[in-house]
Length: 615
Image 1 (tube, rainbow, N blue to C red):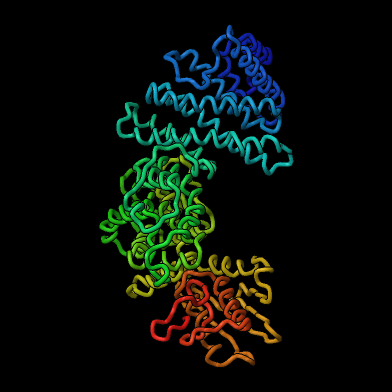
Image 2 (image 1 turned 30 degrees about the vertical axis):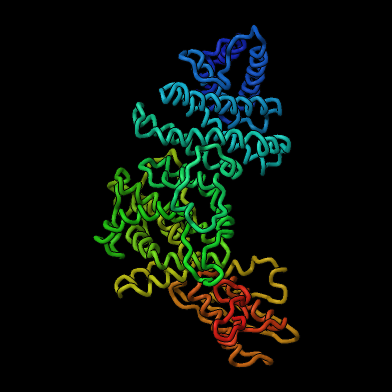
């Protein structure tokens, strides 16, 4: 990489003079100098580079005139002329470097030119794919423009939290430019993925293109996905359900992107995952509006997760299931990053991260129905078996190739507390797959602890011992800390007449609820191997409450924390609402003495068929 310290100042000045004279051959050298400059050298380089942006803006204004020379390839398909295409590539690379290094020093005029150029070049990419196809020139152009998108996205996010004030820039990006930029990118990403099978370019070139596009998907706005212009793609299995409030645009996104999770190309998998992660919280709201025939009769009916996600999980589960039968829980296996099995496993884990995220953001009654579906489909047992065959039970990670136990080691607990980087431009590795497996396991014990506990209780002695030891040492301390810590972060207005005290060292939480001069106190203690072990509830009956009613309330909390997939805080809030409703005069169930349903937290609303009363 060139550096200003190794370049003669007069030579550098002549390079800038040549650019001013419209000789753009030295742009590549100037870009390299900008990349390799040290902090002490940057001020002069920044000034000169930003001056070139102003110069380019002047060229653009001249170009708009009827007699202007054609310089920029804006909103047109690429010509068969490497000279002008090469100039635009160097323009784009220079803008990428300036945005990455000099964003705070750029004027609003500079930013307007960069963002307008970005939108126009992306339109050129899309038009070229339609007119010219996936030739080498188009691929090079896509890679270069995608790099500029990444640089702009990173710089905008930094400026949001910096001391510098750029309100107009942030507003313009959020309300106009980002939607236009990422609409083009989403379309290009889907087009490029669809052409993988019949691409005429070498595989490594296609990989480079997909890596650049996938990286940009990390910043795609939700509004782009909700209002996408992708070809409509619907699945009969999804549309035949009784009632579905999910818009066609969201269904189209899922039907296009979910199958990509099973791709043999890692960048495609990650690009799809990044975009789908944005959709999941919104999808949960549409799922809440979906009804089935028996929703008014059977609150605990199993609810299938959205079809595209379920289809992706099922297909990967079938492939992995036959392979897993050859391995025990305490005997991890090694998957080669170059194998088809690696990509199947990688997509399977990404799909489960999305599924667990959907589960976490759904309402309690929907989570209960999802849990019933997981139980019926046995998907969770397959997932957990796979995770324990992949995660190293020794507590350390080894490098992918030829390492001894002392080489390439990373301690295991960090892989439960830290998210994997999942950089589309990085190479696939066993280390990444193991890290991702640890994250998925932590998500499972956090969001579906009851299902994990059911699976654990069904293991043989040898398997249960391995799972217990691994979880107690590496997962339970962190999970207990987070669950107990969450009780201290709740909004005080939500607690009203209840106070919660945390005892992290003892793994205990003490809740006190006061109603009409009566104080209720209950203690929740987590097991050392939480969530595999049972939660202990200790409580003394207060005056004014019958033994049977207090026992049933305590039993409901124990049942909720043991058999439902809720947190400590969810259980305590349910316990509090039962008390509040009782003193508000709401009639409890004659059978279980509960005021609220233990899984949906709803008031009784169904009619008893024999007594015709509300139960």
